[in-house]
Length: 294
Image 1 (cartoon, rainbow, N blue to C red):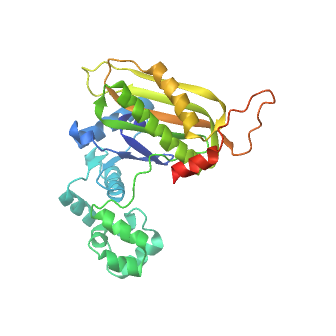
Image 2 (cartoon, helix red, strand yellow):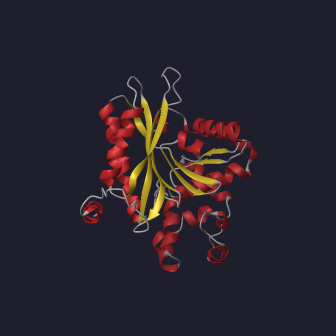
Image 3 (cartoon, rainbow, N blue to C red):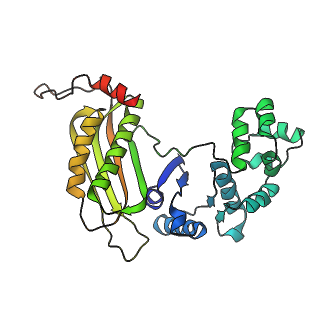
């Protein structure tokens, strides 16, 4: 997952062995099929783990492409399904039960109505599917037709950390622009932290250049700090992140990615403060953050 984070603008860790990558902007510099092969080769080389890669405009089609990548050895375990004609050819070969989210019982009901392949499901009337089955299956139908109905969740917080990062569409050389991007990720991470009703004690900031252009000098650095007290106040997080950013920033590089990670969580009200420590909690912090989130 760490390798995938380095390769794509955003990554959703879907399960322990599966992830969705946002390829926005990647196609401007690389052929997507070549990119998929490059990612596969790097994961294999660095971890020894063999992966299958499916590339498509929606999550459901990407899962379908991944299914084909595993099933058909001639693909080299990488399938590009961005082309509509290729989508339809593959869907005609795939059993409706192999479509993401279509379980055994639903498969039986669909086949009873003559919907036997993924293509049959894609050609079904979404309104009829919604009325006779569910809004979830309606979304699946639309996704099979290239309409994205399931957003990629790049900030999937866990009990151990909240990570907010993204690769830039264009390389950044201006310090203030990069600093602003880091601040944006801090604000998003703080919002997620409050949504989890947690306080964070440690914050990390990282920045890095790209890896695809051999003519650009490479630089990557990360720095973390333990805060004076656990907090969910975005202003506290911003102040700490700004200090970290200033320490790791180096001029003269074309930056491709930046991010923020929050760790060492506490439940709200569960932190035991030091008897000799002066409280530095901001007045009306909770009320201010509620307004910010709204």
